[in-house]
Length: 150
Image (cartoon, rainbow, N blue to C red; front, side, top):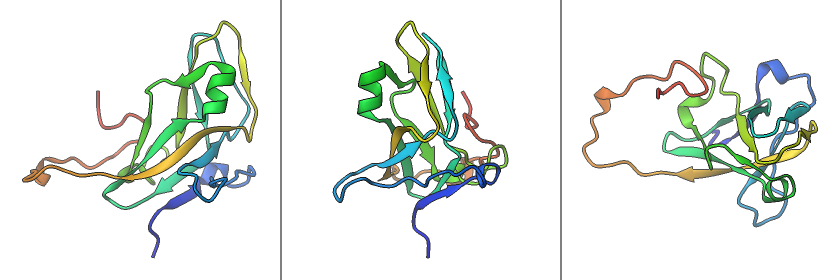
């Protein structure tokens, strides 16, 4: 029985992607690395590929957080503060659930992110829902990144 974890998406299977791991016994986050070399342009949002997807329980999500060392040393941040990967993002038809990290460069210079650089941490969270939620109003996820609407 699988509860939660990471897998490599099919288009990155032969690219030597490392599955996320915690670095210490009490680390909350699983370090997520860049799947390819990426240049983060000045004052611009850049999406960094990870080559990963995550599976989890239906009452969980994967929170994506920038690694503090990377952020402080390079003056970059996640554009949305925290990324949220929903359980039904896994294996979606658009991009197989590919986890993409959207960062913003606050500097006036290019920042090179090398393949294998640990860029983010993923933390699995449980969440609660309200009483008497009308489940028949839900739609089924049919797409990937940003697919639940504006």
